[in-house]
Length: 140
Image (cartoon, rainbow, N blue to C red; front, top):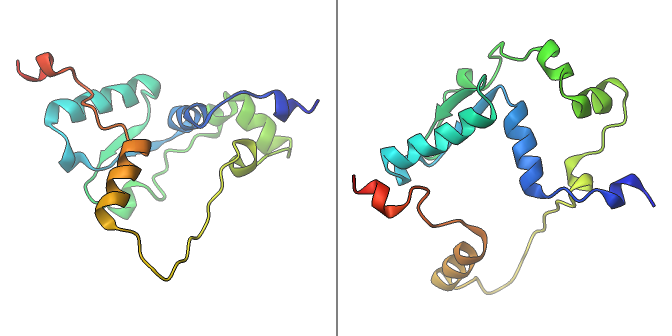
């Protein structure tokens, strides 16, 4: 069998890999959580990648200079990630879309979705909506 067929990594693994490798991490929607929750999210990011610059944003508004041409990329650091070295330096990169089966589609219909039912169904299935900090800790 092909090695890719035996690979059992998930999209969560991909997200973790990307977070650990990033030079800049944008934590968006900071306006939708309490300061305590935002601190908890940033602490997780820093635990996974203590050297990354963490930028908070709201409505995806981030000054371009915070994420482009930052000068933070280090080839020495990147080469410490064996998968990066193998895929880039040895030329056998497999796009994440293929490796993790990520795809997209365009849905077209004459009749639009019902906005409330779509929102409720979509958020219920695909979003983690529980608090990051247990309620008893929030009240302190």
